[in-house]
Image 1 (cartoon, one colour):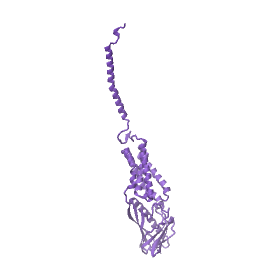
Image 2 (tube, rainbow, N blue to C red):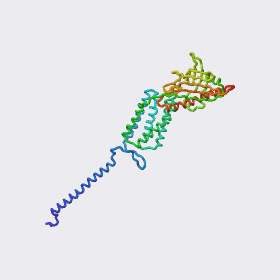
Image 3 (cartoon, helix red, strand yellow):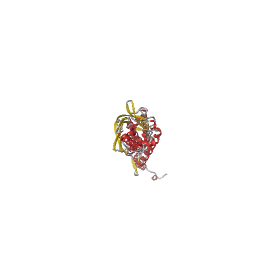
Image 4 (cartoon, one colour):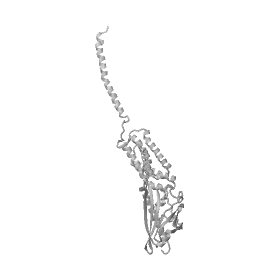
Length: 381
């Protein structure tokens, strides 16, 4: 028979069971506490429920995590809108391409698109943005020249403004992405190009006058004869001073003859590339003054002679009056003054007027210089 002292008593079994249960109960709160801590740790890596600004990592700006769809959506929508605006302008005629809405609005948003495209993954430096815009400007010029052909006038005149607006749009988008990045706001920004179509900028007309004088070693009679009867002008005889007009492809005068037509004196003008027009004389004082109007005909400027998108005496640019004044200084010296009045009608007159003044200054300078060389080359002058 076993020794009863070696068997655990019932009371000892009960005590052991209670002790194990107590230890288990004491460990249960620790398990729940661990579960809560794990959950809190997981929340640190969960996507934020509120919109936050970009953060800095070791002094370098980085964007918050976004899906590829959210990264590319603004650029995709913006691209589609830009194509839509361009097609809208073409559908309403090429004149629409000269409007302030198109010339100012489209480059701004195109620069913003490029800035977003090069920096949608990670922020880039200002230098990289500037370099991208320079490449874009070069691409615009290269692509535009074969498309517009003789439309180089539009390209040259619009390039400075387009480049500035591209930069303005690019750096505005860069600031926007870095400072106030909020995806729902950014996605709505891509709709802003639609405002380009509805900008309430009314076209305004402004009349300009350019006047320039030159002293010529000749008598008033000799100058009077020259301005009324000159022919067989070769292209190389003109634009001795202007660098802009040859670059723009502006043709040179070929002849100018004052004739009597339908009971009125008319100065018949021909330019190279088949351009012709009349200058009906308003008033004249022999050897002193000649004043005229400009009269163009539907076929005065053949297709391809000038930029087909800019019409002389058209909606945006119109020559009004011209005048020569001859003043005797001494028996063998005179002063010839050339005055031109013209009108510009656009909704960006400040910019168009700048180019108009530059073109007129160069043209009047070369006209006066041509007459000076012609008259002073005559014998006994």
